[in-house]
Image 1 (tube, protein in one colour):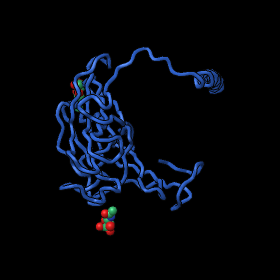
Image 2: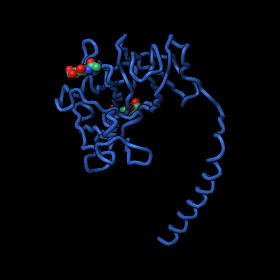
Image 3: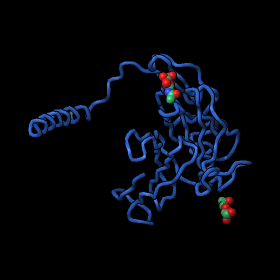
Image 4: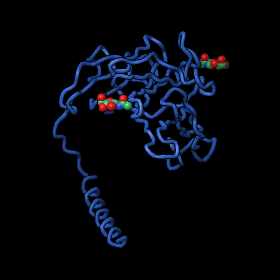
Amino acid sequence: MMAKLFTQASFVLSICSTIFSVVWSINPFVLEEQLLWKSSSEGEVSTYRIPIIVQVPNGDLLAFSEARKYSSADAGAKFIAMRRSSNGGQSWGPNAFILNDYKVPDGLNLGTVMVDSLTNNTILMHTFCVHSVCNGTAGEKPSGVFIVISSNFGYTWSEPINLGEKNPELLELHIDPGPGYGIQKKYPPNKGRLVTCGHTPVAEERSMSCLYSDDGGITWSLSTPLAGLPYGQAKQTGDFVPT
Ligand SMILES: *[C@@H]1O[C@H](CO)[C@@H](O)[C@H](O)[C@H]1NC(C)=O
Ligand SMILES: *[C@@H]1O[C@H](CO)[C@@H](O)[C@H](O)[C@H]1NC(C)=O
């Protein structure tokens, strides 16, 4: 049985590698395209970047992106934009700006989105003011990693919650979650744990760490980092850079 499975697996693998070696050299064929955001036109926004799509438990797709207001730069003031599809992506509702940092020099960045299947909450994690131009403050709010939570499939969201409110070790935390997704453990140990990973912006480190929560996103802890190598030195092409 094992031998047969192995043979089938290697057969499938060899087909896959043949297909991939062919597909690799051509462009994907786009059957249908949906334009969700258009830079320089919608909402007078300079640039839309960092798209993330998740499916929430009522079946809707939620698409998020950074709406960079005045330039395409990573820092700078932004909205977080969201659109919804209730028919599997065939059509999309209007653009909503769910977060706004007004005119700060170093504002919001995505970030990861995850769905807690035990509570049906959708959790959007983002940073605020994590680039050098900000240097710790931007108006009234400290820099760090924040979440907003929706308990109704993205129709309304909580105010931003600094992860350092519940765990002071995470005050002014400078990691960039994602951009992308978080996952939830479906099997023990730590069944139900939410996990989302990201990179440190410091060039010499170039490490990655994960944030995890065992209470549905109320309190978060930081994993030990997976360090870039050579340790503590600027990295070159070919070095181990887990970011
Ligand atoms: C989550 O939402 C789905 C769809 O509305 C529902 O069927 C399910 O019972 C919900 N689960 C929880 C834990 O609320
Ligand atoms: C950033 O803050 C540190 C500590 O307060 C200070 O020493 C440094 O000069 C500041 N840098 C900039 C660019 O403002």
